[in-house]
Amino acid sequence: MSVPYTPTDWELVSLGDHFEITSSKRVFQRDWRPTGVPFYRARELAILGDRGRVDNELFIDRGMFDRYRKMYGAPSPGDFLVTGVGTLGKTYVVQAGDEFYFKDGNIIWLKASASVDSAFLKQLYRTPFVLDQVFGNSAGSTVGTYTITNANTTVIPLPSKSEQVAIARALADADSLISALESRIVKKQAIKQGVMQQLLGGETRLPGFSGGWREESIGQLCSMRSGAPKRRIESGRYWVVDMGSVTRNSELVVSRRSDDGSDLLRAGELVMPKDDIGGGNIIGRTALIERDHTYVLADHVYALTPRNIDPAFLNLAINSYEVNTSLRSKVTGSAQLGLSRRGVLDQNVVYPRDVVEQRAIAGIVADVNREIDTLRRRLVKTRGIKSGMMQELLTGRTRLPVEEVST
Image 1: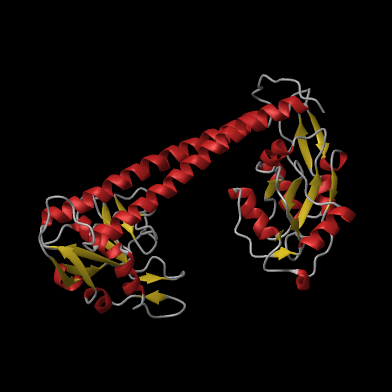
Image 2: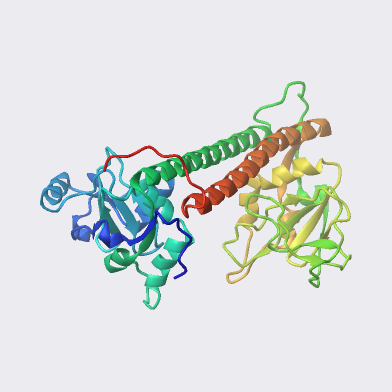
């Protein structure tokens, strides 16, 4: 175990010296109920710790909970819970008003300590120093586990209680900003889906447009070709578009380069994975090529060259729920899923006859995408700042002004 830098006025301590560490009493599966007091396993606690809420499906009777609470205790504000099976090391600090019970052996229970702030401890459980102990202690077991014994011997750096509180508050503020950005991204994505649903089917028309819509096959609107394998070269001139280059969100993501300039893609073409060794979520999705002389087409991918239709609009239409669902219904295979050339060419899409309306619709969605991209960049930057704060504050390299906290 590599010991982190700590100031001389900090200690390295074992959790067992500062917490009463235990677990819950046994609740049998026959005691589970569809309603009552929430009953959490490791998976539910992990979600609760990450999101602050969980849609729970398991409960126990109120009478059983009250009996267990009276005889053995129940989670109280300030208690610290950590998953010991499944996804190890996920944590939750019990809040005022919480009322739940949890599965014994799945979750380790550290009862609130006078000397260690639980919110500070939650941040420590996100650091490599503590997580290495969590996963290192599980090594050698058939199924990874983090036990009460392991928790008792887990070592943490410990400043004064007042400094713990100050550090926890600063990092919690960063977490709140990250959560707010994540929520804004989710809302913007929902707005985008709503806009696409209304505009792509002609359900809602933009002001100034009243012309008709038509339905034609992709084969009537595009020519289509496939690529060939490309030799990878680290400093190659072109980015290679292969099976993994289009995400389930229809974004172009490339990581391989090549000097093979055959199958060069042009701005305005669409690329569509035709095979998938995963769950088939990327098959039938398209991404728009926006630059010339930058990308080359590899195998397992179709390139569509639109004619007499705006490429950005066609990209939206193919990625709409209705069209993509129809394309995925044509997939064949088991170990490797595939979408045939004919299956793509015969797929119908609807579009406005007026290309100006097509561009206007695509422009509105592009504006929302730019807003989402801006928020994502802010999120990446904020996460980086939070990571830097953790490295500085949780090791004592940077110290915060503190107020004395009663213990």
